[in-house]
Length: 324
Ligand code: BTN
Image 1 (cartoon, rainbow, N blue to C red):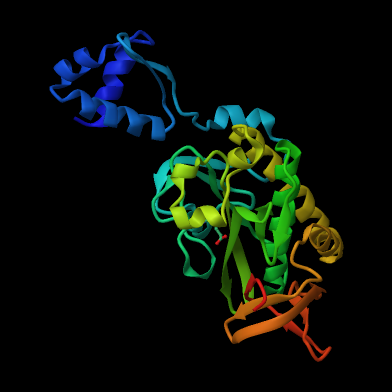
Image 2: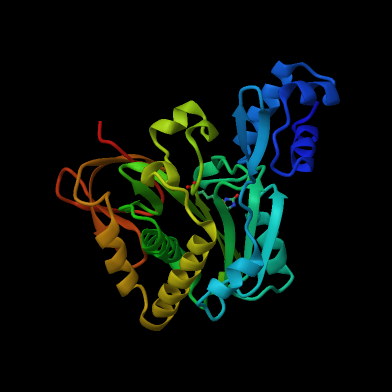
């Protein structure tokens, strides 16, 4: 028996109880097997009431995103005005890259309910279970020189943290360059992938993963030490539609400000939200470990680290960790 046949049976009863006995007879399986499939459906976000002697009853279905619900909530000019909402994809990054190559316009957004090969920074994978998070990629075509691309990484972190704290009552700290933390645990990650030609930036795909409504059982155990969802941190389920609308609005506002006034305002906002400044840290860079105290950002978006001898070194790529 698959969970789908159990689901069809429960759905056919439209909210009425079906006894475990009846289910096991109709589907020709043991009652233990029925119970196991009930648990699986619950893990997928279905709400099933189990009452002794009465049986099982379907009381709720997992929430699904809908473009029709999202569009009226959007306060943007270009961001999210072309939305592709998909069910299951390997990665929204690849879907959007394909659209970008076909000439999609700035602000095009790809959202997926589930990713099967979601990827993170530094070659890591990104868990993206169905219906529980926000897995999306936004297309930018910024008229900026290629070496300034890292500034957009920091801009994205500021936009996301402002947007999230508008919708969910949590305090967000940014860990350099763009991990968003709540109480020291990661709730969101951002991955920028860019396409360039002859030293010219053609487009940037901003991948955003927000762990909105994940439950502890959605995480591999070792990840629970350093990751948390907004639902787990705040105690309430998050309305993903409101959150997406808020992200697109904050992102567009900050991006416009950046194109008009340059990196200054973004840099000040980033530094105000940062949790990695002014305390000893160990940075794993591609060139080896660097120990010191991160003091702020340079004009390009690099992290300026004060070393033990008082000199400064700027780091452009690293994993920031606890000092030895
Ligand atoms: C990180 O913290 O390492 C970055 C994680 C980025 C995850 C998002 S989810 C949507 C988009 N598609 C992907 O495959 N990755 C990004």
